Length: 235
Length: 264
Image 1 (cartoon, rainbow over the protein chains, first blue to last red):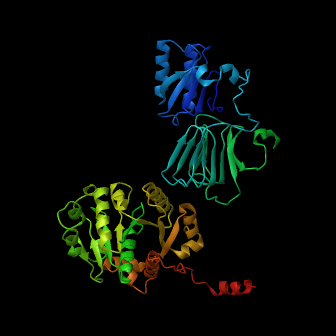
Image 2: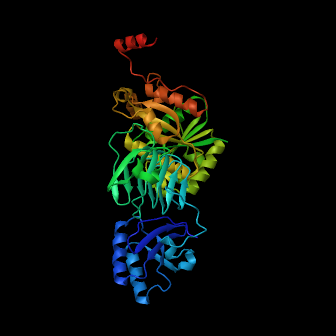
Image 3: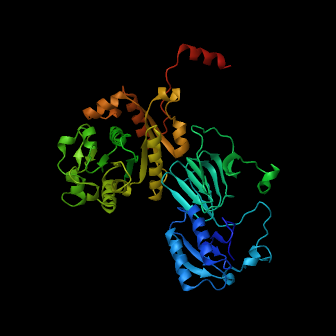
């Protein structure tokens, strides 16, 4: 069972962070050249973060011919990814259909609205200048993230202290990713493909804050405790 | 068994050598048997600051490479019988010594001295790794500048990675007037980021320049504010509890009146 959570998903290509590394889903129904074009576009958006990552591919039961596999490997290599293997529906225990919600998977925990599942790294200390954490899932820091330290996460970032360094959430292109910190004054904040900076000389504490993308803009607002984040519209 | 204390900072020019000289001299003045070790191979300074430059025959590289015995390379201080300097080599570079040799040297020094104060070079490369290799405790020196604090933060991270936990912080060259005007980081700003114990705060003091040039550590000068700060730091290293120095800027009459009125 893969702990999967939704990552950037275009029409026929999806890249996900899983417990065993990255998983690339390719729609076997689509014409191969179109598929490669879509993959290129997708990887273009998330370049940088993926350097050196291992990825396994899923493309139905009969994944491509020899020549096509070679082309796929080349495309992945170009963006610094290493193709380490293939898997089929049997390996995942989840069929493409069930992902589309047509087939209920009983073993999956019940997730209500506003709940996300995924792998997670706990950093049980303050991250100092020069220290870096890169993870395909979520990252939680029990301490501060000082200037010069850096977090890159495929999912969300939560800092139970002051975030003064650089944080990149949703680094594989997930625009729904968020960054939460007790004190949010990052050197630089990135979510998916958007970048922002904290205002200069602003260290006044306004309570915990959350950064996320709303209407194509990266915005920071105070974290409303008890608010149902899943129902953003209701606020 | 003695204790090996490394004085480090990451950034150059923040006062590692001055701190090492004053801390060592302060400890010697309190009657401890002390050795100062200069690990800044190729850019040695500690001998100059102590005024012992003209007495060097052998150096640290001679000791680690077996050219001489430790005892031959140790230079006795001109003021204190119980203080010695192990100088750096000037004609070699940092690769002339390795961390393994430094560990062994530290063991030898600990057997003979109560305190060994190691003056670490700037940077995070081999010179730094050599300096911290045999240390039991670390003192991190910073100045109230963003760049120095950033480097101190990096150094604390590297010390932790090398299992030298809970280093102590010295904030050097603070200027109370500038802090009061809001033009300089204050102690709390720095502690907020570095989050380690404060060992002392040393005010900017012109007498340091004079004492460094003369080769007489300020800690012995009872008219020097920085000297007083170093005397307090020395006591804290010995385990005494001493309050921080009062660095308040003298107040004007109006401020005093305002205070009197506002008290009740």
